[in-house]
Image 1: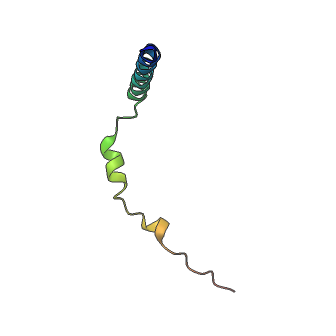
Image 2 (image 1 turned 90 degrees about the vertical axis):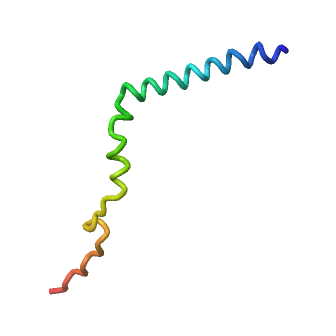
Length: 58
C-alpha cells in the first residue's frame, strides 16, 4: 500500500510531462504538414541516385 503513495504521484508527473511535450510540439508546428512528409518519400531524385560519369583523361 505504501508503494501506491510513491507510484501515483510519479504516474501523474509522467502524464503531465507527456502532455506538456505534446502541447509544445503542437505549438511549435510539428504537426502542420502531415501530407508533405507522407508524399516526400515518393519523390524520385534521379540526380542524387544517378552514377557519375568517369572523368575523361586529357
